[in-house]
Length: 296
Image (cartoon, rainbow, N blue to C red; front, side, top):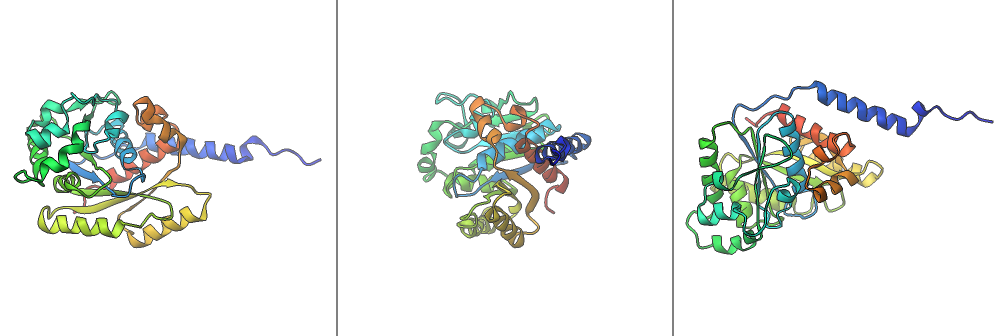
């Protein structure tokens, strides 16, 4: 009768050992903090690729590691506001008031209960009509940038990172986000249509860079919803790395029940289940972004 394998030789034991190794490596590292604010727009006009999830969890991961982080929720659905546990009912002062009514960001920013150094400017349902209202406004593409630059200049403490969560479209709200940012972070889903529409997004970013924001650059691409068991996911990941070798992070974000569950509790996965593979992956991605620094 063949002997039963020892527990430490089983796939589960190897997985647990790897998770422990990753957690210890993260705990042993002190991440560098940027000397100037890094402003990211998280964008992809394709829906369901993990834009909001990526925004919230990278922000939480960096805040957990000592950075002062601001999330601007520019999506009318307000999912980033929900995940960060901040108030965003229709009567709440929000990013809509900043863009349309010239409210100061200082009057609408809220502290997230997630981490002491994590802040959010929420979105409310009023933002759904902002695209139409912006059409006739003066300097319509610059309104978010003007407000953000003023807020950062007047802030008593340096914000190390700002993440702007975009709607899944290329309208005026997204253009405002591109104009306000210095860096673009593109989440790409490891599935069949991953690269579909990406060329259009990159063309639009180039137009923004040429005409409205000469310092804008695609600095970071993050592969999300990765399933190592499928050949397709591995092929997509390799294709994206071949096309964008300098921008793609080495960290892959796996498909994870914990990542999906966390927003329903008004939390990021970083605080919901810090030791889960999904949480560790976002912590590793945040560490990569911190180590890379801002593009020169």
